Amino acid sequence: MSGHELPSVYAQDELIELIAEHEDCAHSDIDADEERINKGALTFSHKRAGEIMTPWPQVVALRVEDALSPETLLRICRSGFSRFPLIGEDGGFVGIVHLHDIVCTLAQGNDHQLFSGIASLPVRFVSTTTPLDTILTELLRSREHLRIVRNHEGDIVGIITLEDILEEILDYEILDEREGKLNANSRV
Figure 1: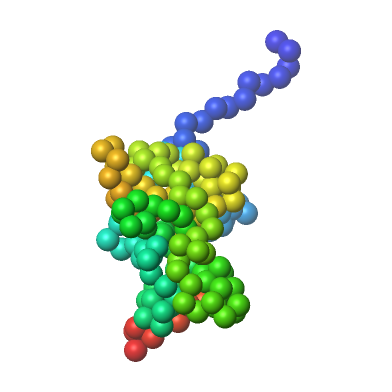
Figure 2 (figure 1 turned 120 degrees about the vertical axis):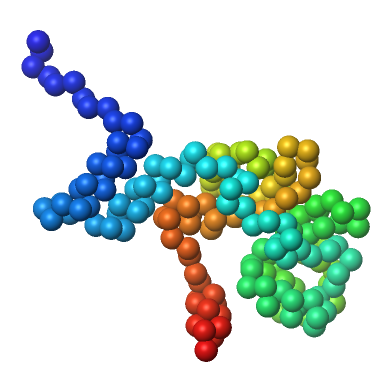
């Protein structure tokens, strides 16, 4: 009666289908990358930490009693990671050691420093059932990059990183320069 049309409201799967149809249309300016990213953005909040985490056996962790020895540094270099959970003598988590802090410690000549002396970030935990959008918000607010994941019994089962969540949104595996070189070399 007022001359205004009621807005159309679409379910999530209808929006995904609508975007896909637009991408397939020759007259649309939506491309395949935009379709992929929109789908990832519309679906990532329904996924949980346990679905995309790195399982604990694959995590490279450091121990508080370990020092910056050539062997430990080689293990860190081979891992390709920049952040490492730090495990205390009791098996609990003490903090996170960042590669930047390791490099700064070495540059200052402290080449036998214990990792307990360079852990900089507190360890924060999430449940395997925590939604990815909740974790993303926490990571962005705290300016941190990872969380330790626990199951419903409280056992440590893995880690989840900001990169893991971004890969879900983008629906694309992010490979940095080093990973690209490793993958290229492994094909030879």
